[in-house]
Image (cartoon, rainbow, N blue to C red; front, side, top):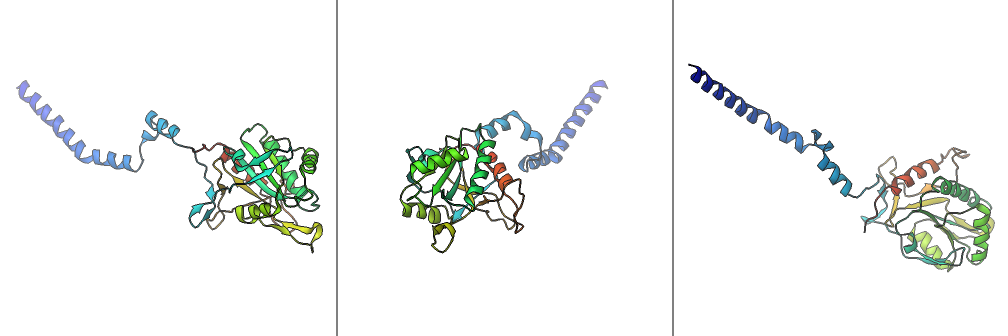
Length: 254
């Protein structure tokens, strides 16, 4: 009698396992497929995550569907050294076009850049590329004095001068930042007050606007302290700092 009861027990267990397999295993598989299970916290998952490149949630500026990369350039900096785009490889950096005799927006732009420089003073892979649009006046010696006056101390901050046409092509075509001569305006030159943000791999990056498109540039004139200008335009230096920090955490893809 005891033996027959034991057989019934085994049959009951087997039947329960069969029912469990039919009902619950497919559900578990489905949950794994959609990621609704704690394997995301497993050690194997952490290893895979750590092996994958870190990519910030910032958009790429695309031209005809292709991410826009910084074009080759070669100019002389404030120390008399030849600087090319390769000197910025592996670095997150900002780009501006300015001139030293500018009495309107350039001082405001560069005070903001110095403030950003000081925020990331410990980041060896952060830099700034400043291109003068008045290279005939802004010689290496003039740029050196300008850098000293504004306390531009970051070793990766290069104020560059060179062939005027090459600089204008780099601004208007290479970075899509307007720069040009205009004898009818004060100081004789016109240029954008925006900054371009470049990642470690040389691509132009930015966050998206309200329509899901890349903002492309960051306003460089209004300071954090001012908050907004007389036209109600809000400052974007805080936003820029946050995005620089994101890109500094990205991996360099070789």
